[in-house]
Image 1 (tube, helix red, strand yellow):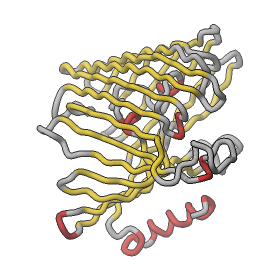
Image 2 (image 1 turned 90 degrees about the vertical axis):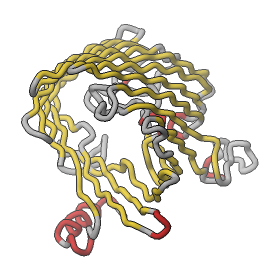
Image 3 (image 1 turned 30 degrees about the vertical axis):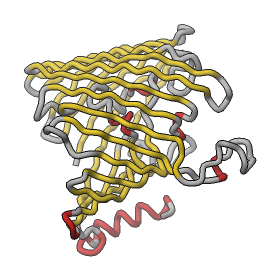
Length: 336
């Protein structure tokens, strides 16, 4: 479907629910903040933080199987139409699959198991996201993902492989090159998790993940270890990862990084703090241009209702070249 037709399709789905949304659930989130960003130039802006609109559902099949599907799009309520820097509608997790006693199988465009392994330890996800300094926060297209049932009501294995696009993946324009992949590619991601990332069934969460040669991190291998624990109203989190490989630019790449986070909940208030450090050998992405750096972030959330909160945050960071980033803002988030 062309992007320009998407709003009309959504409107039609809402207007004719008996036809277009037979067994679908509409859900989403609007998350916008007014913030100040200073990277040497002081700028005020209204920013949407991964606001989204989605449709999901399931249907019972024969043989104890259930069909599942999801279509989720990032939306940008801070702009009227597609601009130069981003689109009003952008694909997020979009897949179709089957689940049963064997687990869950999905095909489509999805977060990698390595990304999902972070759980909830990134307390400022989407606002001052850890991808500023750490690799692996990617969504992969042309993907097949299998998630096992929970073993002993605790352990889960999550795996993903990337399907190649044949000669289109030949980086040298030669169909005989080793990079040509007809069928299943070398890209893979796997995570083993234990506990509960939402700390509802168990007060702890742990994960160990490995990813290699995914298109979004071409030529890079990543190992990630995650741990989280909730003690009464205090939640602690930690993440460590190491990355190495050779980029398509033929530059050697290595990075060791970590994240530490803590939150304290008191009635409707949640106080949060987080520190991220990285020693990237080559700059990849993020507002802090340079190789490696540190970021320290503080924030307070206030619940206005079950699905609505307002929040303030302040972040201060610098790269190894001492280029600085300061960001602070006031935001509002509503889920539906």
